[in-house]
Image (cartoon, helix red, strand yellow):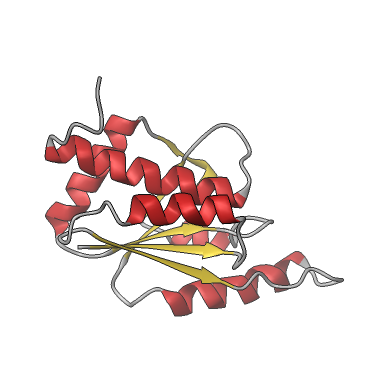
Length: 155
């Protein structure tokens, strides 16, 4: 199975890239993790609808047809780490690949959110995009470790 994280925004601080790389290399071969950063649409004087449309097109181009789409959204379902482990196990049981989508500075196009298979939230707090990437990859790794009986997660 492949977990594809599609994130709007191509530049993150070195600490965030280092953290992502550290967790990404820990995943087992049967659970491939990939990050695809897509360009943020320059803000300027464009309408929100124009921004959403441009970023949506880039996100959709990064996701293969047939992938389960899970968007990260502040209005999404609140999950515990154990809940995420259950979701990961279910996704693996379905046998398909999963795309997890992190929006840009203005979030995601409402139509994209509505069309997603699932919408989840990582926190009730507003987080910087670089932090979201790190938090997501760590929680995905922790979810895998719970399911695998790996000692990384201790209760």
